[in-house]
Image 1 (tube, rainbow, N blue to C red):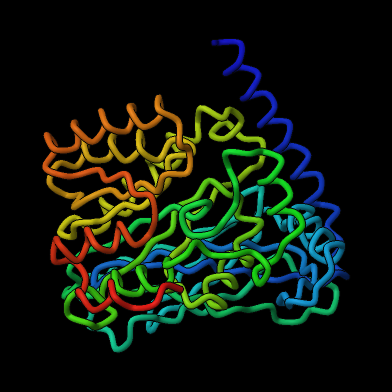
Image 2 (cartoon, rainbow, N blue to C red; image 1 turned 60 degrees about the horizontal axis):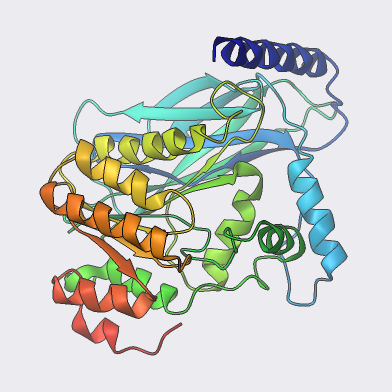
Length: 365
């Protein structure tokens, strides 16, 4: 409705005003930090996002962390004091760029190359330095960001959801989801059975080299980015760029209906950045992944090898909805597979020649 749009714009404008007031009152005596998110690129471009916030001193998790420690750390993540409109200098090899963060402290760096570059190594470093504002100690605040360079020899790419696709979350039960997110950490949260082996097999493809890029697109907030990255490392799940969502009050995120558009836009951005690469999509049946992936197939015919949907909602009506979407997928030159477990996905991928048959017989992790 028009009044809803007007109200949204009004609230967003008020939030910007308060952020600007707070910017003038930033406590420069507190420690600040640049958080670089994993970026990605090719021989033609390099993209990296990040955020400038007050350093809350959250330490890596341990198995002995108590529930209250996890709850306190989660509170610190969401009670982030951003540094709005911070100015950052980014350096990559001989290139340099200055960018300004938005009112939430988020910034994006994009390098475009005049000629196609050749890289040594899958990950490239980007030097980041905070130029303004200055803290009271006048100390240099810097960070090293990393970007995944997609190899021209990649067989395909993978775009995966996270919650109830990679990690047990319980999105079909709001109470269970809140309990898991607030009271568990990267070590006590559990991956779904077989995910580590399957995702490593997808990364290696049939060539058995780690050339296939994995991207993670989730509706979870950027505030828990560190938790996801630590979770992947602990459980042996291949690292890749993680695209999360800003849960602040803004015109693009105030309504739940915007979730589909956010996820669709994020996936399309990756597809557009790599126009010559085909992709495998992985999600679950709990929310809108089947519908979103079907829309992607329609918009990018012949680009999606298949979409794997993990069955987490065993309702006849939901199964029928997904069956109809699977029928449509064939008309777009793709497939949509409803799978009860990771092993089903792995067997299908091996039969299609996307992963090694030996990967299917490995013990599930």
